[in-house]
Amino acid sequence: MEPERANDLLARERERIESSLRSHSGQGPLEGDEQVEPGDSGDQSLYQDELDAGRVRELQDQLAAVERAQQRLRDGTYGLSVLSGEPIPDARLEARPTAELTVEEQQRTV
Image 1 (cartoon, one colour):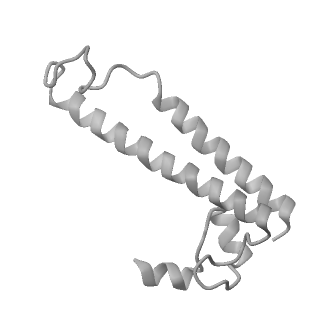
Image 2: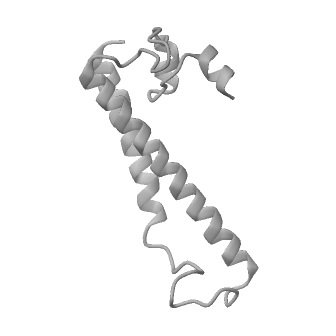
């Protein structure tokens, strides 16, 4: 994959993730905050808080994957498996710009 295309894909992925993170910030206090006692708002609020916290962690993990991919791009190793060094097909990188493994390697790790 051409470096310019990879850079564009990664920039779009970063913006998507950062936008999602922004949408999760500034929401009301979490159940664990000092301002709200656990259970004051009902079970639904506690469930939603936990769901939101999990989503934020997932987005942070995705952002870290973008940063690793951008570092590989700078290092000249983007598009190569971090496990075997085998090329990752461009079609996979188009679908998942942060891919670190080939499809076969990914399937073996699951």
